[in-house]
Image 1 (tube, helix red, strand yellow):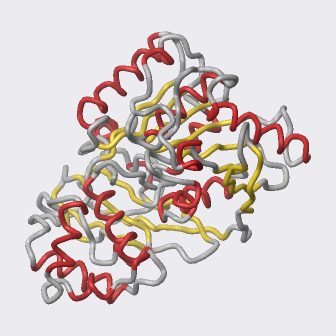
Image 2 (cartoon, helix red, strand yellow):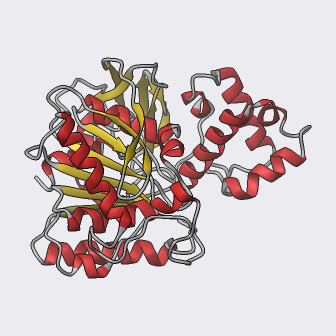
Length: 408
């Protein structure tokens, strides 16, 4: 599961790479190289004109979200994303990562009656919230798993900073630990497409009605869905069935039956090297086809494909319990054991690497010193950088902009 740069967006970058920012920069250097200086982040160095440059913000302290890049930000795909790319112009560039504090918040956990059983629910309703976003886990996931995963936490922080309410629950099959439709997996039930005979759609409606009755929100507040993998596919049908304002899917193509008739704006956030047996390269291509189907029908839709990104030494210090020194040590373990190519792109997914790390403690002492939480985080980061089948936080602001403004 993944990391960011977008081939389609690169065309836009190429077209705008020589536009000058209003911010003062140094004169063009001699030769075919120029310098990038990243303040409060990483990616500084000398690059050839025309190279794709990747930059990253410093790690975010608690109760803080990434704000914007300032400086030569007209080159960037979205100045609000903590990880960005641009095409190197014939001019030295300085960009600065900025962060902003958010009011501390915490999710409320409660068991709330669904159609048949009490459901695990996490929620937060800011005062004056402008929308309710249902966050949907993937196959085998759970409500607890979602709210404790680093990339999802970043998304929730960004949603709260944008004044959205959050609701997280889980598929009925997960709650019951029972494969209700005998498909061999525990996940959301996408069919039948109605709230009467399908318990998962019914549960969302029951939770919504509970929050209405309690006065936490009301029917005038728009609703949205954002899901990963099977949760992304469920997002397409859920947003269609209940006429949500928009829906977003990460690493799932959704269903043609939905997109043949839906009028709900929908965004696809795919992964270029997705290896999931129900998605993969074919699923990525199908998602693009569905995106084009919607737009051909005059329905707002956007498509992004998360590309792989290089490992940088401080990457793993994004987790507050991992220091920059420790992150750098683990980076060196990857580099010294030939898991990074000449440009520091990771060569394999965590499914392949983690067993090797554990079986060879003398070669990977830093990894083997990590606790369980740190190991999960580290392997998640590897998959995000590989652009495998994984929820990623490189498109938070892009997705939130789609919720707010769709294709405007």
